[in-house]
Amino acid sequence: KYIMEQITNTFTDIYKWIKEDYKSYPFRFIIELMAWSLSIGCSIAMALTVPNPPLAILYPIWITGCSLYAWAAYSRQSFGMLINYLLLVTIDFIGLFRIYSV
Image (cartoon, rainbow, N blue to C red; front, side, top):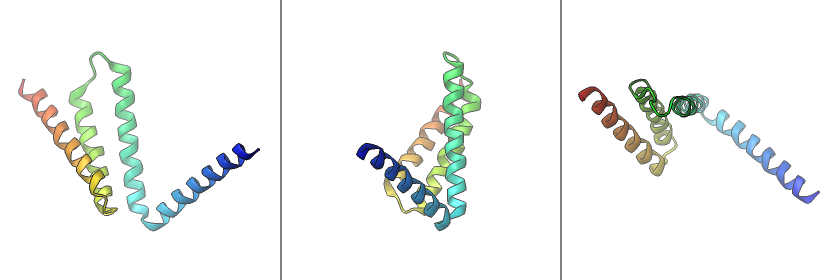
């Protein structure tokens, strides 16, 4: 019984946190949701198309998603996440450039 209470409380707390996050900055919440959808979509596309994923299509989508996440991180004043997503944007741009320069 105690474990189920803890699980229920945890999910309730997460739900409250999500609602509060949305209320505090709805635009950012939607941007993060879009970035998450792009990230998951790319991961699914990659998993379904290995060993030859359509990187020329996926890289711009990843770059867009990471750019959205970078903006959200900046708006949250989260340096660690901002630098992470800026680095991912840079790495993905290099990959995209290499695709078109070969």
